[in-house]
Length: 430
Ligand code: BGC
Image 1 (cartoon, protein in one colour):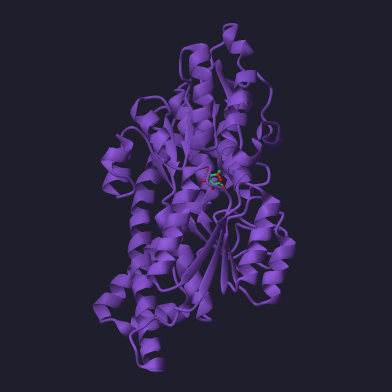
Image 2 (cartoon, rainbow, N blue to C red; image 1 turned 45 degrees about the vertical axis):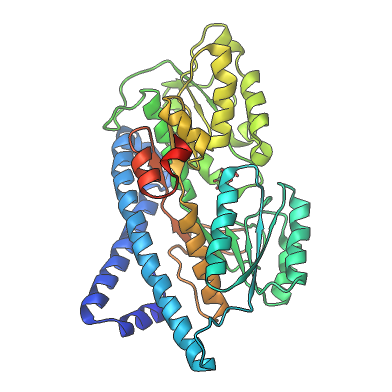
């Protein structure tokens, strides 16, 4: 949960009881994350088929718990860093002001097309600003070349650190070399930046786990597995498969995670894919475009209009899930099982109405908190805390990462998780 210097500073600051409580939290958190990564190891996916839903519900409980631990630990850590920062600045200049006031964080985000990125931007801005940083934030309109130009502008405007949610994870090598030549630290935000040695850290969710949750929701929604996760014996099930944008590293993790639990049922002949289109690059939606996804779904409808039943569609996110439902429902007169991710408001309304079966919730407030903490540490010359040093090889190096735990949201728990958790008001999703 934290680096040795952070632990030491923390331990030095508290009473023995507080120290023990805090260290227990870190240990519990480290164990949970190690467990989550091991559980979702793709190489063991086939062994897991009989237990898929049992693990899902167990993981949902655990992830709720983990999330609590993350927030608690994070808040403590942030408070500790704040305390250290304030003490440092008091000692340095004899005033109560933050030592970060004149520093500028450049934030480059991919698009406003999905509501989640708007929330990401809002959370980052709010949290950086509240710590006294100036923020220059640019959205790229899903245009990779424009994003490279925007990052150059952030460098030219004097950014002290960069936070980048990439449009195309492979297109930023040259501009990040420019950042490195000016010693500007770079955090890859949510999406890994590939083929560059000039990124320092990666803040994201456990993206493979997101995919596993989507795959399990699909299987359960179609009645292929029961509430305990065991195969029900149902056969003759038809699905279609969609994946996210090929230039987004996350899309591969989502697809691999989902297919790790779905493919064994295809291989066993339980599930068919009537279009024959299953491989990631055959089913990927360039740029995560919802309209393109809706159009692709429409082109796949013929066998279902001729009498086959469409039981489910693997959708990688809420925007695509809603586009699929929008294409299928008027044409076939029913809604198949479709999962998603991002807990976007239209998806939550659809879940409440009994249409979309589930969404994987990734709390953008917490992701911003992790990222802001990383930047703050880097700008102080410290090592940020990380919890993963193996999962994200970008082709040049394994990028040290902090991975958060996603959470499954269904009709049964959406109010509790999203309204009680303060992510949305009742009025927003009602
Ligand atoms: C994000 C998802 C999002 C998708 C499309 C991915 O990189 O992790 O949350 O739905 O991009 O914007």
